[in-house]
Image 1 (cartoon, rainbow, N blue to C red):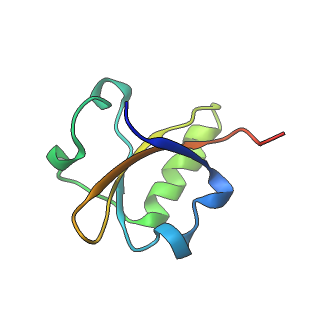
Image 2: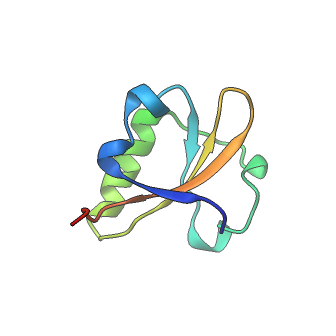
Image 3: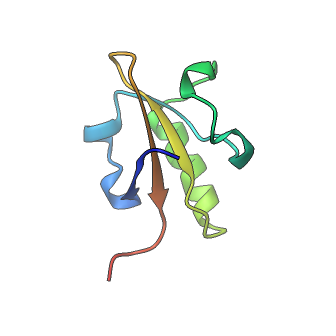
Length: 81
């Protein structure tokens, strides 16, 4: 999987709020995000992430940027030490 990871506290509306998102299930991770048809907004993906955090899961997020480019990253639940 190509991408990076960020802490949830760094996943903020100012930086990411203007994009669209999707949290694929693990079997779909290798797919290219361009094949995803149903994208959600920042607040919806935040809710999904928080639900996954309850089970200590750090989801892979696909982000569709305003310019049509895609990024992949994990939002992690654990804190830096």
